[in-house]
Image (cartoon, rainbow, N blue to C red; front, top):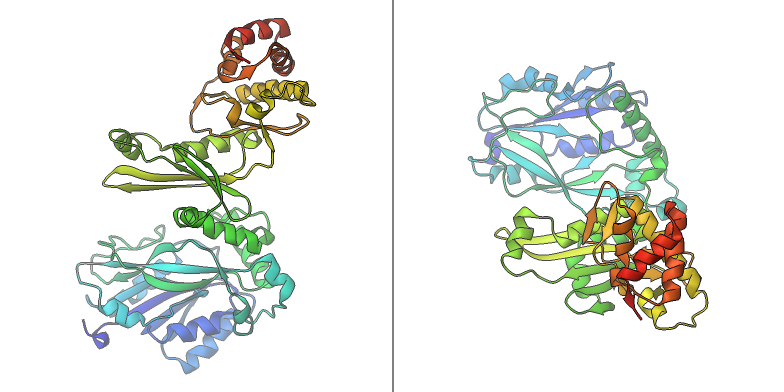
Length: 454
């Protein structure tokens, strides 16, 4: 397909984008034959800027000023109005956003897409502002002036349908986000630079506009979960952690800070992220974990979320499969600040506050069982405690059973992999009984049956 033989029509929906609209429109004019603009009730001069630019750039069509509530089908109106101008070799950019810039030659890219493919996705670099950015720079609200200070980007690269080859079969109803049918998707995405956050004022306005659109039942922005625009500000450290968690395998391989190494390996990456690499399963377990059952890494992440503060904060998991077989899997959590394990405490009968620690483990068991969680690896090395017995956590949580309720007998059996002396049993049983409202004597009798003696 020759570059000059096809047209690209871009559908742009804007609202209050005065800080960036001139830059994005002039950039899109490099490769768009027409940019059909719908303004959804801007109050900051966006529509006036579009009209002024249209006088200099014939590609820009200020087509519709729509004052009603936002809904996902607004671009469908423009699609239906201009579709008669297209032919089978032309392309629709079904969603041009005012905060996105295509750094390469869009026309050359699309010219190389084989005709059997009908849709091209974009792969965006999503730029963000950090709290340190706002402390170090004064943002003017003029994108061209502020752009040099917008240097941080999220590690993940989001893909989303953008370009569709024109076809007489394409249908776009106003309740649809895209026209259908979109056909085969090209395996190579087109890169986009996405400046969704540009200044404190813009972020606050963006948040207010989207919150109102959601309240109006627009059918979009479900991913916007913040309670304030400040919720979208990260610190430089959080951004660095996001990168590490998004590249767990590489970060793990590069780390020399080994915390534990036997069948599985635990390393520290960054400042305080513990990453566990699970031993590669053999067949048929590699097939079972690859298709029929959640991997140990995924179970660790999901179970840790259910356990809350009873285990270190879960951060991410990663799985790598080949031909349906699980190869490598990683689980990342915040490194616990608790300095001791029960295994260490059990070795020292005269350790100060040992009785308080044993009591705290009983309370911990009770809290865990109240959630319906029964840990199959409840052993001394997996129970972390502090020196004075105020806090307890469990690690290695991929093997848990979940019950609607855990009774006294099953609950006391939880200690069967713990090494305890009689005094430990007494204090642990008291903590468990006090928390769950059981008889301490009966708890002690059952725990004495199941624990491992020192």
